[in-house]
Each structure stands twice: as structure tokens, then as C-alpha cells.
Length: 354
Image (cartoon, rainbow, N blue to C red):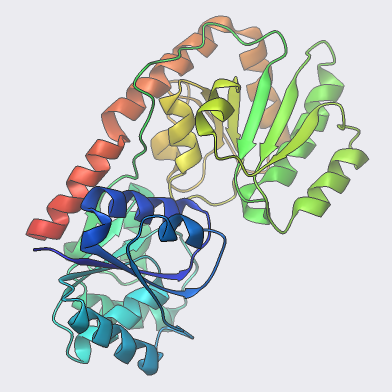
């Protein structure tokens, strides 16, 4: 029987935690174990699954005390597969294997981070002990090749979501269109870029009536609230906090903007398309594989305020374009980004190694 150990250093409420939760629910919590280091707001979601959970301090990628403890848990729980989510946890899983744990080690590379020459050389050596390394986009596949990982170790599996069974195509924007942005409130998610763009949109197109909902929490919250006041957007922009009712969020939205400076793929863009919402996204990372410009959404350069304004203006004026992107996005989701497809490909990798 396959028994899977998932490693997470910090248990937050982001896309990585969602990915692990989806895999655990599908595999069955009784067949899974979680090891984490730092407690975060997402831990409660794992506790509700009633799976075995261990806390092990992981101070760094070469914490031999942590690797030894992980090895002991692998042996005691009869783990056959260790699935790590970040470089630190991956290295610790490999060290546990070197210390005698008999298991396969898989690593999913979720976030593209800069790596110097020394880390790239180390990566080449350490990942030679991985059975497979999952990349969530073609962009990330290429980045890992540049970071020293052999192509023979890499496997592309797109993230997937459980979209609604019904379709909700948009035939036209609402009387007061809702522009939504979803994500942790931090610099790389691009909310500052969006707000500055909306201020320009309001100035140049005062005839359009709209509202922007910002969903999420994070360290940049106070700065963003201040910026909204500075830009005189209080009547247009509302902070909604963290939202668990995703169906309500998306069905109340006309346009979903993903203004990030860096994205491996983007669950938000995929979820929005599953609900046939129209997506505007930056042309960074794996977003270009989700949003095909003019077919499944609109792509703009990160930081280019005029391009963001132009994209919004197009959607407010062109009903046929709105309809095309709404239907095209849903079709692209159904072909590439379903939960079923992601789970089938991941569990095939667990069971066959290819």
C-alpha cells in the first residue's frame, strides 16, 4: 500500500497548501502523514482532515537533526513516498534517504526563486537523488533546468481546480462591473500596480461606473489602505479580507485581475476561468500558459499602467470580446486545468514513477 508523507515548512493559506490538501483528500487522510515546522493559519485545515501530523523544527536545508527525525517518522509510519514542496524540505527528505530511509522522494517546485551558481551546482547533485521533480508550468520546467535539475527528473503537471459543474458564461458586464483581485497582500502580488492603474482608469474614463474588490490579507494591508485614500478611490475600492466562499466571490465578479510580478502558474486565474470570468493578467511566469492573449483572457506587461487601463477599457466597450474570453477561458480550463487531470497525473507518478 502506498503511504505518502507531505513536508511543509510553514503551513499558510496559499496555493501550495491548497495543492497538498487536494492531494491528501484524494489519497485518503488515512494514507497520508504531514510533517510541518512552523505553525501558520492553514494548520487548522489539515487538522480537520484527521490525519497524522508531526511538528519537526526544520531550521535549514541541512538540518541533520531534522533529517534524522524525518527518517524515524518515515520508518515508523512505513512511508513509501515523500512529497516535498520547497527546496528546504526537499533537501531534508533527501538527507533522510541518505541516512537510511527507504522511500521515493518527489519534489514539487511551486515558487521561482533566484539561485546563485553555488546553489545551482548543489541542486544538480541533490536532485540526482529525487525520483521526480514536478513542475507546475513549462516556465518552471525551464527555470529548473537553469537551476541544475536534469530534464530526466522533471515532470510537467499543471495545477488543477475543482470548477463548478455548471457553466456561467458572461454575455455582458454588469451595470456596475465588479473588478476582483484575489491573493495575499504583499508586494509581488501587484495590488499597488493595480490600484495605480485604476486611478488612471478613473481619471481618463469617468463615464464608466465600477467597483474593485480586493480579497486577501497580508503584510501590505495598511500600505494599500493608505494608497486607496491617497488616490481618492475610497468609493471604488473595497477590502474584503480572506474569503472562503469562492463560488460567491467569482460569481459576483465580472473581471478578475492577476497583477503579479511573479507567478509560477496562478490558482486564481484558473479558478476565475472555471467560473467563466474574464481575466486580465500580467505576462509573467506560467501565467502566459493559463491566459492566452485575446483567446482566454488579456495579457499585459507587469507595471505598465497604460496597458492595464487599455485592457479594462476594451472590456468595458466590447461586449463581443467579453463573451469570447468568457467562453474561451472556460474551455481552456476544461482542457488543461481540472482537478481530475492534476490528480490522475500526480497519482500515476506516485504509482509508476513516470
